[in-house]
Image: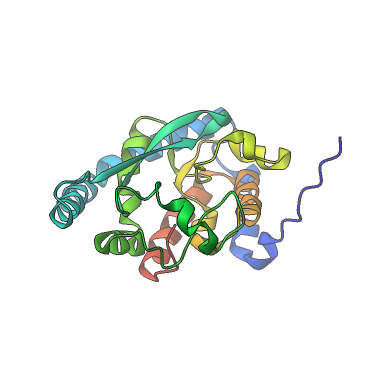
Length: 229
């Protein structure tokens, strides 16, 4: 069976990405995977005085807004090799959000299987702040510690790998990440197929220098408020 993969034109739109040459990188193959893991752990350790107090403050503010509800939200996501794992986020919606999803399905702005509403009525006041600042993703540092995720990689989907088209499955060859190319190039407004093109571009170019660039550009994108993840 012949599989037609949509053309990836990300390189011409982003010259900085085209200039990255992984074949010239110091670490390749298994050495890259080890170095990437060590980089993740190193960044988490040196960033501990920043992200740990932020976690505590965000959790406290969520509890102040709705004391009876949990601060954390745990959702099944699809990771490397199609393996399902529990991903952590701060709760940004009302606790019965999934129950009323069917009632607002007609407001979905993206193609199935994605679901996104710019002004989602289920999002809480604190949740809007967390989404704008991307702080709702901060608890995923625990997923990185557990080695379910990396700091950089394709975002894990909430839907199972059975939903993927054959050409989509290439993204499952690598560890999912807290941030990736579509967070800095497209953010929350990007359709799934377009995100897949960015994931493929990342897989083709991945090296420590690209990971570092994505981390830096993610911080810039958050401060420029380029949409929610």
